[in-house]
Amino acid sequence: MASADEPPERHCWVCFATEREDRVAEWVSPCRCKGCTKWIHQACLQRWLDEKQKGNSGGTVSCPQCGTEYRIVFPKMGPLVYFLQQLDRALSRVSPFAAAGVVVGTVYWSAVTYGAVTVMQVVGHKKGLDVMERADPLFLLMGLPTIPVMLVLGKMIRWEDYAVRLWQRHSAKLQLLSAIVPGIGRPLPRVPVAGGYGGDHISVSRTLCGALVFPSVAGLVGRLLFRRVPSNLQRTVLGGIAFVVIKGILKVYFKQQQFLIQANRRILNYPDRDDPTDTAEEEGGSEG
Amino acid sequence: MASADEPPERHCWVCFATEREDRVAEWVSPCRCKGCTKWIHQACLQRWLDEKQKGNSGGTVSCPQCGTEYRIVFPKMGPLVYFLQQLDRALSRVSPFAAAGVVVGTVYWSAVTYGAVTVMQVVGHKKGLDVMERADPLFLLMGLPTIPVMLVLGKMIRWEDYAVRLWQRHSAKLQLLSAIVPGIGRPLPRVPVAGGYGGDHISVSRTLCGALVFPSVAGLVGRLLFRRVPSNLQRTVLGGIAFVVIKGILKVYFKQQQFLIQANRRILNYPDRDDPTDTAEEEGGSEG
Image: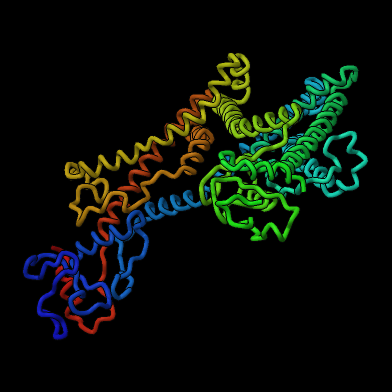
């Protein structure tokens, strides 16, 4: 039964059963292996392949020893099954893009709505509706979503930081101002590392929320400070400018104060000393 | 100058300079350490702290050797700076929640819009607007977003999988049907591992897209198959039911065929054998 260069009896390298133990089992020699790993039961190899291919019945599997790819033959598919398989694969391939489209569409639609609400807020409810009804629909679908985008981009310009940095760079020239704002121009005991004090990082959530809330704040400030301006649009624009300027000044002042606080920090001696001379000496010798 | 239990001369454990080398530098002994690590220059310790605290000027820092927390003293803050600091912290704390609110609001508003479009699609454009105008606004704001949610939840009920599993479990009783559908009831050469053939996993993107596209498909199928039904609502509902039933039958058929294909796969012998007897023997002995 066996050829000359084979061991006298086949045995399966999965279940170790020999030909004699199971006379009806089907044998297969699927790879280049010779000798004791040449033969395997068809059923044992199928079980092993199921394990290897878990979830991916089309994947190729090779012999772990000789690396030969197993030749797996499937029964022929009917045309309907083939069509359904192709459809299933196409849908699986397309669906991530479609889902991304759903997400983009959701964001876009909310941006359009936000833009429309902002227009009504800025120029007044009735006038805003009038303006949008008269405008080209295509222009609205393109223009309205740019409103929140512009607000966020505008919010990302951190001009206050540049102002603070300019201030600090030219602080020597600001000696004359020291009478007006405390701390300006005075020689610092030390210069703290940049970014080491107040958070200099841009917070995504804060930028987003600040940008989206800006038109409402501008309207509020406009109504508070510019009550006599009759036009809704002008009042809101003035309110927005006033808010940006006031906020900018406060921010520059706050950053500069943080800088000064950090520059003037001191580390104290450890208090529990039984040697009063040391402490006294340091307190006296602190100003170099 | 130095007390009895100290080394004769102070030296800084950061820059290794001694008292004699820099007579004006300020010294500090910030922790419990004695001996050669007792003293450090105030300026050297400040630089070291800047490095340690990078970006978090309020954080505590301890001596790496004795673990004593350094006592850092900041100059007193004015009330405006304190107020600005508290405001800054409060905004930083609130903004992630506000940003989450923006995301939820975006999704919610898109769901409302989708629900409104679906109502108009299902009952007809004009009648849909009529229905929504007459309805309670609160009911609309609650009811419309549930439409996409229900569609997605409904899509997640995979009744076809249960049908396939029931079929496979009771396939022995289905012998009589084998004349109608090929493969039913025939004894299988083997039972593949569950999930090993067709993808049994739920794809999020596919579920989402399938659910959102369903009303349009239902309307399309309704117009194709039930042209004589005058009511837009009835036609779309009938179309939806027809689509679900047809798709279900196709899916059950496809899954069963995938199962059969997987069950009937065979691994072939390696072809380049110079021993024709082996091959012949196997071909003959394959049916156990």
